[in-house]
Image (cartoon, rainbow, N blue to C red; front, side, top):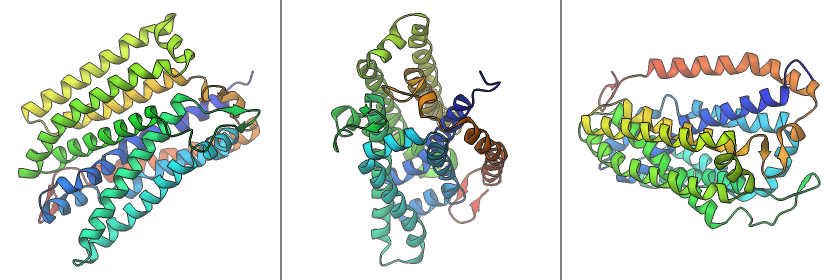
Length: 335
């Protein structure tokens, strides 16, 4: 046994990168999902300005998670990609259109409506495809030998459509609570009302997906309802209930920050729940972290780079959010 379990360390790094991507890029995708609901061009400008300094940096974590999977778990990458080609390609194309529309809408008046629609459509498609990919992983990917053995449309099931809708609604909640925190006046009031409904819908989706997930694989059911690990079926829902109280209490009392923090907690706790179901699998139901890992020499070499780069990425991300803290003024920017 090596002094350090390198596959486990790398699984933790990739899981961390994916979680950070979800909670950071989730709220700016959520703003795109809510874009048509904003009343005026000025409101939409303020919403975009609230994420302008950070949106492209948020996607750094997607690159880190996907590149890390390719580098250190090549077998998992080789199985997941053919299984999820369609939703992943659609997601990437949607992110491209979304990024282009973010830049181009400021440079035209005649075509601004087109780019606003592209921003909305790209955000919805990207969020929905991420949820579908998540659902496909949860329900399991068929593997024979060391290759994907399923069909072209295995990723499309009622369960994956449900998880796609859940992620889309959850991202909209993150976007609404972000705008509550970053804006003032009628925009903040409007988003506070939306956040109440989206929070209730997100909790409903979390409950429904949580009920159905244990029935996707007997291992999941045993993990949640048998043995010592069954305690998680009490702890995780209790923490979700606490986060829900914090959110709705904060929204009713006019708090700015606590609803957003509570929305982040929903995603973090859901992510922990997925980890509890999956471990030690990296591609359920049969590919473990150890089986999918590259040789230890490759993992150790890549870990040196990660130890250097991940703190740097964390530092400049934290600095960007610190510099652009506070509310967004429609005329003067941040204050």
